[in-house]
Length: 147
Image 1 (cartoon, rainbow, N blue to C red):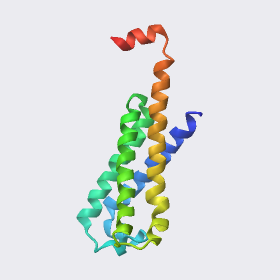
Image 2: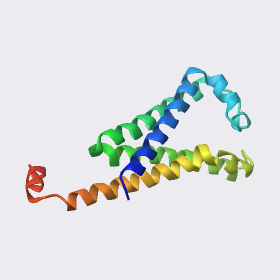
Image 3: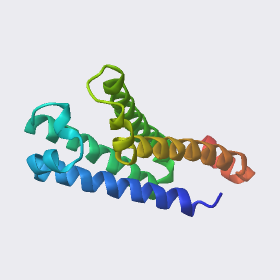
Image 4: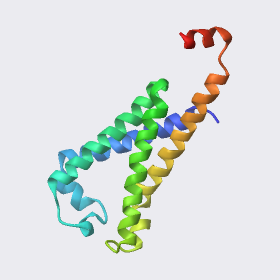
C-alpha cells in the first residue's frame, strides 16, 4: 500500500478532530445544540464539553504530528486510536444501558465509530510499516541504530 493514502487519511482525521475541538472550545453551547443527538444525553455542561474538546485537541495533535514525524507515528496514532475506540465503546455502552436508543449507533457512526475504526487501522498500518522498515535496513543503518 502506498504511504500517501494512510498519511492523507491521518491528515483528514486530524483536521476533523481539530475542527471539532475548535467548535467545542470556542462555542460549547452552540456545539451542544448543533451536534445531532447530544441534547438527548443530558443537560448542557460547558465544563464537560470543553474537557472533551481538549481531548480532541490531543487526538488532532497526535494524528498530525504522526504524519510529520514517522518515528513517533506508532505511539501517537495508537494513543489517538485508543481514545477514539474508548469513545466509540462508550457510545455503544450508552445504547446497551438504555441511555440512548439503538438509532444512536447509526446516527453517531460517521462522527464516532468510523474515526475510531480508521484510527485503529492507521495505528496498525504504522506499526507494520515501522516493522517493515527495520527489516529493510542496510547493515550500515543497522549499526547506526544499535548505537
